[in-house]
Image 1 (tube, one colour):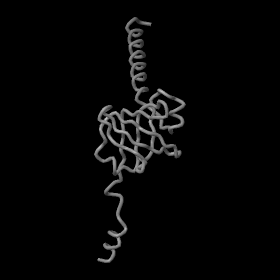
Image 2 (cartoon, rainbow, N blue to C red; image 1 turned 90 degrees about the vertical axis):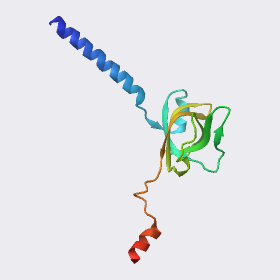
Image 3 (cartoon, rainbow, N blue to C red; image 1 turned 90 degrees about the horizontal axis):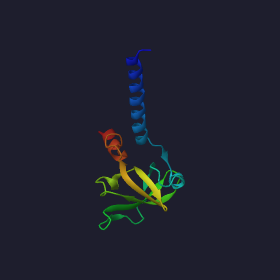
Image 4 (tube, rainbow, N blue to C red; image 1 turned 135 degrees about the vertical axis):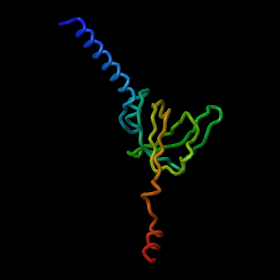
Length: 133
């Protein structure tokens, strides 16, 4: 084999390995709080809903937003979000938090707030009124 071909193949393998290594850190699987507890300290994505009747609010001392969330399996845990409360938090039908579990508390660095679409959800009263016209 020619030396240029060998150097090119080594460069391509090294570049591909570097890309895969960096990309693997951003890929996560969706798990529940129980599995996150087992993987304590590891990054995880948890899908759930906000438990409205439990304490929540912004802590000025630690500069975090605290709330309780129920995952898809029915497990409820306190979530400490390292940022301010998102504007559309109260309208959320589903939350996805990214972070890690420690001592029965989920510490989140990132949160995705999923709200209902104003284009897909038609109210039944509006549809009935349209039918009468």
